[in-house]
Length: 298
Picture: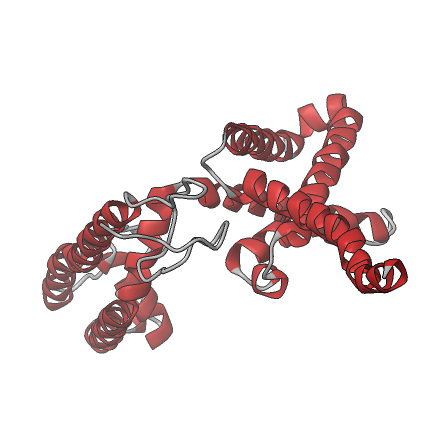
């Protein structure tokens, strides 16, 4: 009886010994995920605040390094500081990949690509000889400015604006296409009316003038000389002022819809998970994405 009981208990001892190790690994990943991707815990909020400070400081160091007087005096210190920032952001990027359950989706997402672009230039610049590839290194150093795009992750309003632009992309495309057609028409008209003798030497130059005029920039390097040309220029300026209001209305309408959806989502989130008290769930979620417990919507 004792031997049979021992044999009966033996198969269960293997999973029992492996279970805590697997649960510890998943618990560590979940903890890192909550800190890096979450906003509800104090550790997550402090991590986001520290990362924002690092991003702003690193971008400020790149801007300062582009000034010749600062670079000549503090170039070595800024170089070491840049490597410190790069190593910190590399560790952050590795932890994000390690902790997220959807690694491929994160790597190829917008924020994943931004995180990668923010650390690649320093490593690529290190691989090129300074004497032969000075221009390439300068380009790589300028590309570190893309690090500032990492701040979009911490601006909720930016996500609303991005969603509004995404929803209105077809309307914006139609609008931009109409503007391009209008610019080509004005440019061709000015080429016919003014001609090369008044500075409109060809249609591309005339289109350049139309772009400058319709956007109300008005450099003044090319100006119509005839009365008819000045009349067409006045019409183009008035059209330019009218055009400015169109994309504002399109994006504004979509932004209001996104705000309404966000308010509905927040009211939906009010029904938090009874098990872990998490509130950031999708609209169609039936189970908690953190603990798997069933959600009860009010």
